Image: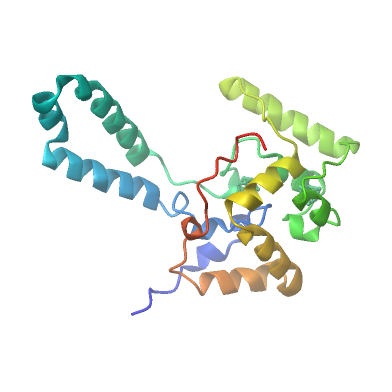
Length: 206
Ligand code: SF4
Ligand code: SF4
């Protein structure tokens, strides 16, 4: 039996990531990441893994305890609100760049092919520079970190991570228009972006 159709709020244009990811297919937005972490935590606790570790090898107990704490934190994490509502990657340069160009997504940008190939544009536009500065300052104020990549470099990393799914989405948005594309996404309620994500670390060099 096919899963029930997604609710209308998952057709919100704010869920179209600037990079072409669809937030409505993400475990974090749907609250499924927290739910899965909670379920695993419950099973591990009922299984008594910590007590078992103390019994078998007391040296393992601190590591298992730390892993359970990470799961606890994940289980308490609120659902991500989505790319267009301030969720996603804090300080994301792709979103910042698209917003600076007054675009909903990179689909409307003439530089998409160049960015997808990782060719950075000199950040000359005043509006883009100002938007980037504001977001980086907010990020620094939050956790002391500055975003390490420009928009093209990060878009290229994301595209590798998604195996091209986001670029295919951007092409479809170009062809169909954003609203019609969102209708199509909502018609595939069982799909999760996890299915196309590789294990590559988007923060690594290369
Ligand atoms: S990677 Fe950036 S542009 Fe893509 S969905 Fe996340 S925050 Fe939005
Ligand atoms: S310049 Fe690149 S990152 Fe910025 S909106 Fe255009 S395609 Fe997206």
